[in-house]
Image (cartoon, rainbow, N blue to C red; front, side, top):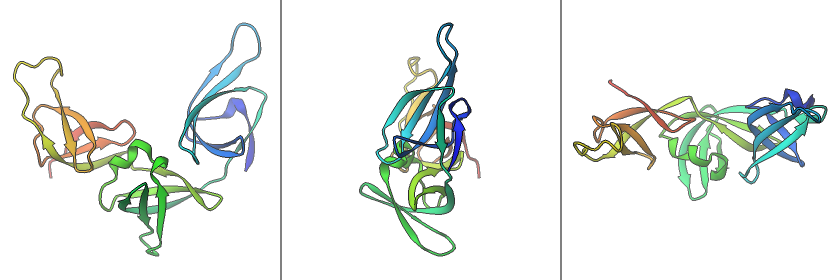
Length: 189
């Protein structure tokens, strides 16, 4: 662990807050007209999965965690656990579903991810920026429907529902942004 000033907290790092590892989701430096400057930090408690906000004074010291990353392959969902395997050693690891939150629906067979490990426990999962997923259900678009402005909901192989263009059909392979869970493009193989 290393100590950093609160003003140096950046999105994407892990910090120790109230003796628990937290992932920084968003930061905002605030310099009010009166009083001292502070950094507003939105972070996720990696043990409970809860998102919280806290204002750190600029002169506060914060512990930045030294984390290890390990490439793993997704195997399957097992209730509230997700099972990953090291492709080199075949060692399997079970990760609580809440650590992935909504991203759990973007796991496809044999996808490679990076597990973030702190104190010999998995505290985060990093997916590739985009994943390929197959459409399992896409209803025909209703002509003249301007409410959806050229988009319709389609269901992906994992159960994820995304808004896609009207021309998307069942069986199409789509590229999905893992950060926003949004349609990027249709894949033409």
